[in-house]
Image 1 (spheres, rainbow, N blue to C red):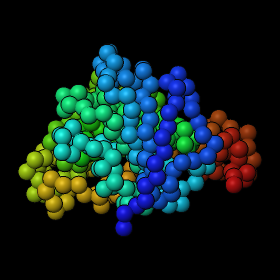
Image 2 (image 1 turned 45 degrees about the vertical axis):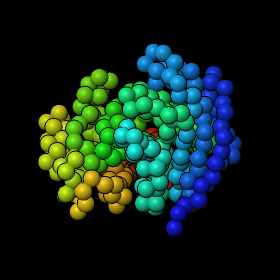
Image 3 (image 1 turned 180 degrees about the vertical axis):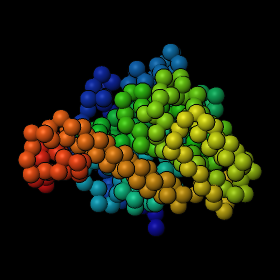
Length: 311
């Protein structure tokens, strides 16, 4: 059953765009919400590689869970399609993935240029500008969006865009919790992380999920295995590859597997960090405490409080 769409037209002055916020929400729980958003001049210059890009507006689609609560923080995946003319709509690709993603508690977002763009101009600069605009629009409708962990995912050439966009947004201070690469035949993550100065232990712990169709002749299983090995040799410690029965085609169930895995990895990291914080707290404070087992990090504090105060 197709999900319902709502349409909103957003027009923010460029200077105020990124500070714009809304007390209400134009997001349709369990459906697709469409927005038309003006690109700020700064982002048009990025998209135009120093000049002024002809693209003036981003067409943005957002999918949120049926039980969406604007007071909560949800993980967000930015969807990217290829630049190939017949398949270049990221919003159309989002629609294919939406049902399985929102069922897993994720928000999906995608953006396309309102104007026609040639293949040679549909590059990483433009995709960055469109998605930065889209995320700002999302924050105007859902203020928690600025705190949301981000993942990036795409199919075929869109997966290559995702490999660039993840480190680009990480360089801007966003928390990246996963990269989904489906139907991809060459890696872009390593070159992008080097260019953005992020080929470090922290970013290399970002989980990367590769999805390959067993009968794919465009991006073969061997291509995916090679990319998997390249990432591991570069020091990426969380790389997973799965094979489906299809060819070079979109496979929504594999996206759900990736999103569930991203959530698991993120939770494990938070738990490890918390235990390390507790252990460090005990090393400093335990000799002054009475009635606690200082050898057990699980009996440490949260936010500086002893365990007896935990909620």
